[in-house]
Amino acid sequence: MVDVAFSQQADHQTKRVVLSDAELISLQGSRPVELPHILSADDFAAGGSLVRYRAELDLAVKPEMPLAILVGKVSLSARLYVNGQYAGACELGALEQIRCLHKPTLFVIPPLFWRVGRNQLEFEVYANDRQLNGLSPLQIGDANQLDLDEYRPRLWWQVSLVEYLMWISLAFGGLGLLVGLVLKQDSIYFWFGLTSLSNAVSCLNAIISRPLINIEWFSWLVFTSRFVSVVLFLLMLLTFFDKAKPWIKRSVMTYAMVGAVLIWLTGNSRTLVEALYIPCLIGALIMPGMMVYWTTQTRQPSQITLTLAVLLVSVASIFDWSRLLGRSSLEGVYFIQYAYSGTLVVVGGLLVQFLVNSLLESRELSQKLELRVAERTADLERAHQHLLSVETEHSRSKERERLVRDMHDGFGSQLVTARLMAEQGQMTSSQLGQVIDECIADLYLVIDSLASDVITLDSALANFRYRIEQRMLGKAIQLHWRFQFDGDVPALPPHSVLQILRILQEALNNIYKHAHASHIWFDFEYCAASGRLRLQVADDGIGLPSMANARRGRGLNNMTQRAREIDAQLVIANRDLQSGSLLQLTMILKHELS
Image (cartoon, rainbow, N blue to C red; front, top):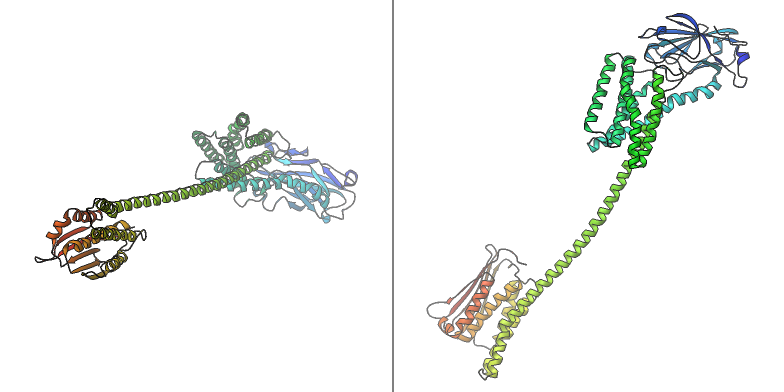
């Protein structure tokens, strides 16, 4: 037994004492121990049992305010009795179903529990063979002061910090797992997400004191997730440096799954867990050296940062390995939980940076692509306009050449011939006037065909009728016109209109010069349903023999050639056996031409 006079050994500024002498009552019997004390395997049953620690506090006066007892570390769980009265537990529930080994506990004892003189403090501690077991020194003092100075800092360091790191890494991991699933490929984001998820599950052991599931299932989940997390962590590092071959991934995942099954089958055996960690520990010792080598080759800032973080994890792993084997102090914490979660936060930050950089590069590339597309579109538009201009100019040039050729072959050649004949005295003034009239008529035809790029036949025929009627004023020939257009006549190119008008002009000239006719009938008909266009010129003159004797060779041949150029059928014949001639031009207009 240890007696401590609170009034003599208390810190007068903090009013605090520390009890380090106690009596242990275990399966080995009763013996005095010094706190912190670590239980031996013979003190409790392997499957778990209760042991008791007793300490005594001597008070000179009864306290007026509540005193608190701070326990930095107990075994799996504990409850406290003060002078035989139940004063509380580290967590509500049966001791074998709660877990308080990773957090400090502050027992606030009301003044009525205390008495002047000797006070007995008894801790019932539940211990099993899956972790270090024992009891840390007992700090006793003013409840408020002990809470502010000792309990809250310890709680933040041992529980809250672990929880914050876990949630941050889990948030990064969830994002990484989502990105990995979206990418639908074996990427660093996917393995980082799995590692963070398994680490979060393993951290439940330090955060949750009262599991909602069976304690055996909870213990297996914690042991397994911690083991799987380490395995995935090594695989994640290899993937980060692009060194994870497919066979390595298959082997590592097989090892992780087999280990999880063995942990369950052996009842969360501490010995098995230590054996399973041996390859991981070897990997943790080799990996930093390999990472340093890879980093010196690439010198990438992200790899340098990760390598430094992993070196810290390796140091923490070595320290915690000795703690796992029972060779560290009872109150020491597992530094791996800070270094490991912190490293995952670092990796998460790096991956978020990679993702942000990728998005920025993608946006920049998209902007550059849009700019280039706009430039190429503008270039294509300019090229298109240039081609249209060239094509238009080419079409105009061809049309000009055609018109020049038509004028040369038409009234141009007639004027040249007439000039030569006049100079040689072979043409009378009346013949010269007739030639000039024909040239003027041909020139009008050309002008009509140039009225627009696409001209309607009915307007051209109307202009033709007007000129012919003006030309025949005062002549002894009567003109008869019939227009029967069933629907709008499709627009024709100028060349086709010009050829049709020249055929009609040639027919009129032949009749006027050779047929000696009194009447000329113009019959123009179009049927929209069939697309058939029929142009007919008839007279009551002497007929084809006389016309054939006059200019059959050149006139008829010209008309036949012009009809062939516009895909029309030309028929020239006598009206009947007595007199008169008939010219009929037929075309099929199925589509509008441009």
